[in-house]
Length: 359
Image (tube, rainbow, N blue to C red):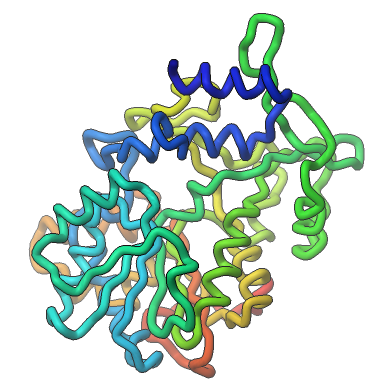
């Protein structure tokens, strides 16, 4: 039985499911989900990340992390979802072997196996499967392209009323979208808390898993920083009229589509991160916003121009920071802190000066 049939069987048995449930199965089904199979990233995979460009990204990131560790008075780094371990390797190579304690939160057994193989040269790494395994963390917690892959609810405003998108089946057993009442009051609370009033005929995603994750991280952080690197926007940009069909995208062999109901289990499904939500919900967990900037400014302020040594590095820089190449402007960096007071991080030197709720 393939994943499509498994999902259809659940719908036939229990009725329509939320899109969040559909996305959860498509990406994280323990046997057939896209991420459960540890997909290849880069030229031979379905999509590129900043890490795919080369080690220069991790080297610049390590410089920012070093500064944050000094402010936090700790040597501990927690990476959320480490992929194949390449970024961890690029970062750790910039530290003395005994100077840092590196922890990876990873739920995928296949990814853990790949990470342990790729990071076998380092002795200062440990793995956890759940955030419950850490309390009173001191140091730096970071993620790179994690929040965009969390399962999302999809909602649509119709004639001044908010509906949720469910996934059902037509009489030929094909996937169809069905409007229904919101499956949880948290959806309405989300828009109330963010002070968002969607216009009619507007469709968008609600990442409640991202909200829960930032709050959980905030609760477990005693002293230090949380750095989120991902593509997305603050609320004031995310809900503009030209995004009235939402931001959900699928990637299969470097081809982008907006159809999540094909290549189920074999394509990535993502949505843009609402960084205003991470800031506002993070505040409930005691997190202060240090700054919010785009990847280009962040990497330049972190010293990436000083790292570039040859023509290959300079070519890679174009991909990472030049707006025309996408990553420099589309990818954002949100840094939140707890227990360190008001600090000035050099990696945020050119970050815009805005209140946290506006970003």
